[in-house]
Image (cartoon, rainbow, N blue to C red; front, top):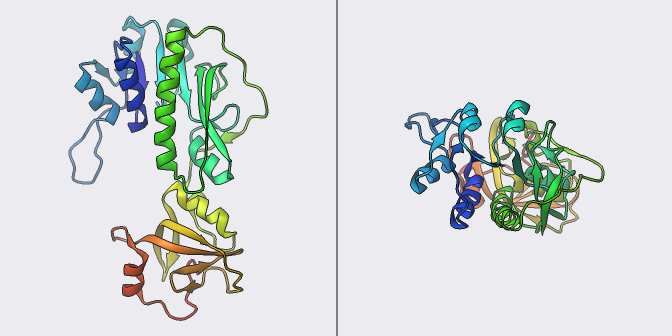
Length: 284
């Protein structure tokens, strides 16, 4: 039995299927609209389950009588009732090195904090927020250009292998989490705001999370890709200097941006249309 929601759950489902572990049921979120005018579509893991001929349900209650010996949870995003855990044991793939970054946004919080490494833990699902004992874990470095999107994809692949190997060898006795717990609270819009008074290195990490934003002439301007520039300029933070922005320490070169109500574009194209005045600022 498999509980999963977004695209990151697909590699694990594929790995279980290829390893010939029988998946008797996939539980995920209902179909929904992905755009204003689009028809409702299934989650990626639901679509993949249908391709593999695996029954799909949107109701957790279906788990109780599905006949599974073990539940596998990946990015499910919903609380599994304790009463259900008492009937069917479950393991969860969590994208952090527990107990660091328990919670909803471990990949994003690891990036924002500048962590040098992250990883995946296979843990028992238990009452409480990511507090279960750990069966196995794998680490991976966070590179200087890693984004939340590509890091999440890498962790999904590592987690799929970790899970299949653990099941093949028998789960055995897990180990309690040790060390100081930190919490990866859900990302909010303000977490992605680019405060140009902060150092360039910190702001670059915000951009790598995805969806970073500032303002220009009163409208939102999303910033999708930047480069660090070794510059000791004393310009006021936020000032545009060609394709660069002054920060509290160092400059950032804007590579790709997205003006309000427009598509993503190269910064050169945006600058050609916007024609910023001398000393014009972002976020001002």
